[in-house]
Length: 170
Image: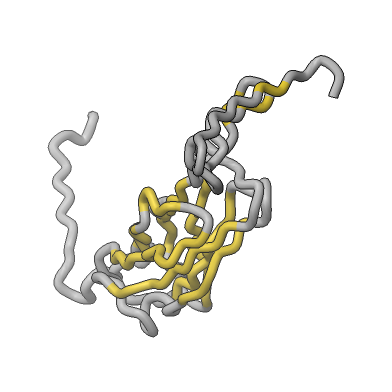
């Protein structure tokens, strides 16, 4: 094209049929020299915290993010695992794949938290990323914390309050 240049350098040797062409430059760039390898974005998952509720199921959302937009689709697998929270009684076990369309950098994995009225400590479970395609895994483990929102009823009977009047004001 106009304003472009091509430099060709070729050295032939007698009897050197089939010798490779060397030092070919197009627009100042040597042809055949590999450029830097493309860098892949990294994928991470963040921790999440939510109240258990007294009944039913509520979603606890885990943010899954790419370090930068990708020109092609990216996917990563995920799976939950029990910690102090137990799958089936405190949360719904879940696994699957998160797919990022080209240009998208954020997705959410929702895990169902099962409500109850049992007074208990806060409980945790994990969500782990694996089998990424089109990205490397930077932070592949998130902790889900289910906070207890139940209150213990006072013990019947044995509780009493004593008030003492020290002045009758008059």
